Length: 64
Image 1: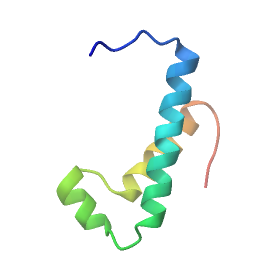
Image 2 (image 1 turned 45 degrees about the horizontal axis):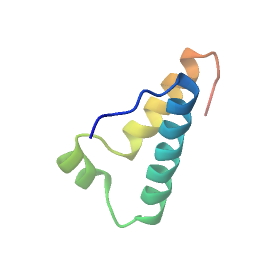
Image 3 (image 1 turned 135 degrees about the horizontal axis):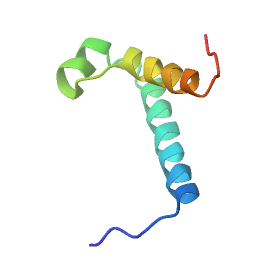
């Protein structure tokens, strides 16, 4: 199935929605430990929050 061409705003909306679902899923699965995620996926909850802060900082936004 070919991937449809998406304008930048639509792509951003879809990526944001997927990110919110990922965060919601991780919040609901508190039984999954960071070490489990690191071993299986190569990133953990800490990585995700760090990436979020780094992207915000690149736009001049400070997040604690």
